[in-house]
Amino acid sequence: MPIEQTLILIKPDGLHRRLTGLTIDRLDAAGLTMVAAKMVSVSKELAETHYAEHLGKPFYPNLIKYIRGVFHGLPDHRVLAMVYRGESCIAKVREVAGATNPEAAAPGTIRGSFGRVTTAGQFENVLHASANPTDAEREIALWFKKEEILP
Ligand SMILES: Nc1ncnc2c1ncn2[C@@H]1O[C@H](COP(=O)(O)OP(=O)(O)OP(=O)(O)O)[C@@H](O)[C@H]1O
Ligand SMILES: [Mg+2]
Image 1 (cartoon, protein in one colour):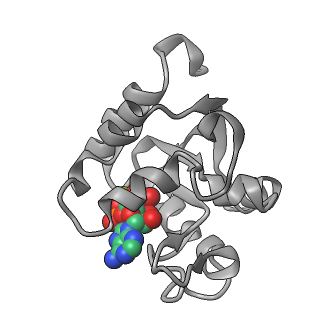
Image 2: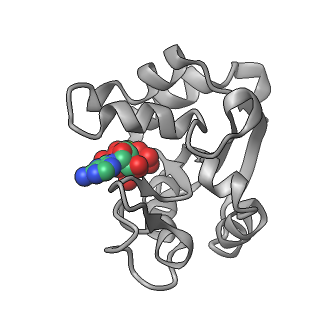
């Protein structure tokens, strides 16, 4: 099985609701290893580049606000960015994370346990996890310098 790296972001709802430890605990329990971590102040440009694939979709404007913490009043638009590494890490993290829509996410997954949908229809799903190796490579390079990731 391939050794992969994936980008994980604890999103503003996760930070605001103090779900960081619980989320990291689930990733630990899945046997995954953290190789980089830092708090990041998310600029509008970073948010738009990260979610470029969703430009033009109806939920896009609120998605940019959400990832920047606008709905949660966090100072500095902060998220916790991490890189995890391990065998088939990308699929394993997506499995532990659960489906995008928290209401559809399986019980026991992070999003199934802690995620929610606001009355405005915003998915507050606690974490971002890269979807495939191409996205993972692009996203890790966007959020981290090479020297910030353990060899
Ligand atoms: N139909 C929708 N309605 C509202 N928000 C949505 C919808 N689809 C996606 N989103 C928001 O956009 C984000 C990115 O959507 P994407 O399809 O990439 O899902 P994901 O890969 O599971 O999530 P992420 O990229 O954040 O890890 C979702 O996490 C969610 O916050
Ligand atoms: Mg995605």
